[in-house]
Length: 337
Ligand SMILES: [Zn+2]
Image (cartoon, rainbow, N blue to C red; front, side, top):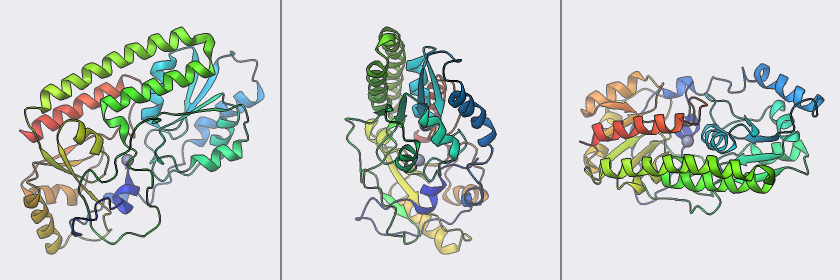
C-alpha cells in the first residue's frame, strides 16, 4: 500500500543550491521495497484482456481507452463517461514511479484504440510496453501536452548521495495536483478522445465541460482559502506538490531519498535545523502511511504530522479527485494557520 517509494528512496535532487542535509531516516521504505507491485493485478486484468482479445466483436463497439495510473484514469473516465471503455494499467495501490509492466498491460495496449498517459517522464515503463504491444492503430494522448514542467522550484533536501542514473530529465511530473493544470490535462484528454472517436464528440465535450467547471470551482476554493496563509512552508517526503505550492503561494521543502537506517540524534538535529531554516509550519506524510519514525520526528519538531494525498492511489470514481483535493485543502488550511 505504500506508494511513492521510489521518490522517497531515490528522489531527485532538484536544487543544487541547498546543502545536503541528512534530514531523516525513516522506515517508510519497509512497505516499499518488498511489495511486489504486480501481484494481485494479474487475475483481475487478464480475463478482461483475454476477453477483449478473443471476442473483439462480441463486445460493444465502444472505443477502448487504456490509461496509465489513477489521476489520468479519473480524468479520462470523467470525459469518456459511458461512451468508451476506460481501463487502467497501474492499479491503484501500486507504485507508479517504478512500475514494471506485466504481460496483461501489453495485451491491453495491443487491443486498445487509445492510450492516455500523464507524460513528463512519469510512466517509464510505457515505451517498451507500447513497443511490445505492436498496435499500429493506437492513438496516444499525452495529457501534459503544452504544460511547462517545473524543475527546481522547491528546495529539495536529500538525505544521502543519490545515484547518478534515474535523473528525471523532463521535470517534475506531478502536474495533476494543481487544479489549473489538471484542467489542461482534461482538455488534452477531451481533444484526444474527440480526434480518436469523433462520433462521440458531443458527449466528450459535454462531460469535459462539467468536470472542468468543478475543477475551476476547486481552484477558487483553494485560492480563497490559501490566500489567508501566504508562503506557508511545508515539508513533504515525496516531491509531489511543487505545482500546487507554486499555484497557491505555498512553499514546499521536499525531503527525499531516505536511507533505510535508524534515526540518529544527528539526523534529528538536522531535521530540526531544516525546519528552522525554512520556517516550516507543517510536516506531511501520505494517507495510509503510518510510520513510527516520522511520527516521533514530528514530536521532536513539534509539528503535527498530517497526510497529504498525491492521488497516485485511491478510489476510481472520477469524483474522488475532488474529494481527495478538498481533504488536502483542509489539511493545508489547518496546518498553515
Ligand atoms: Zn509521485
